[in-house]
Image (cartoon, rainbow, N blue to C red; front, side):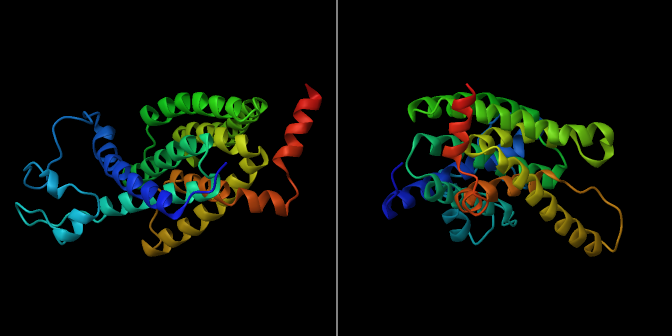
Length: 271
């Protein structure tokens, strides 16, 4: 693993902005089953096609002062926030995992979690048509990464983390279906794959972090709405808990004395 230079981090951030722009298309169109390629990007108000010069991530939003060039209607702030958010996630992943084979896999995960979190916040849904394909691609990416880095056993850890995290959420969801949707459970299988690859214990830390974040956010939403009952999405907090644990994994594992190398040694000894 090579530490990224400042120039490399800037390039990764710019690429993250571009992918973030594509995520906006996914977030808007995929829940309704629309094509991601046709028609071209349009203003949701006047339906005029957006010029290529007006479709530059973040920059166009600033130059247009947050309004459509044709009709003058405000452009949702969520668009540049998703672009910037994805760029920051990509840079953070590069700082944590360096320039390595693993970085590609974690960039895929972080962008997926961002898209799913936004969709869940807006529509209270997590899309299987995102989770399942990314899960399949991730198994391949993590398998290749483990083989290239000379640690094929880590694929077993990843698969174990995936199954473990899935079951950890499936059992309470099965017992009390109203408390958690199956979309959260399926997303947990994807997150567990990556958490398990770093160290299986991170699955436990991630779900604890997600629950704490969800409780705080739920209380804020409860009182902000005047104590009225309302749907509350758990997916964004699952995603945030996963991202935080992955980015802080080196420090977390060091504090708790849970070395990935030691755990791999135990796996090899058992084999």
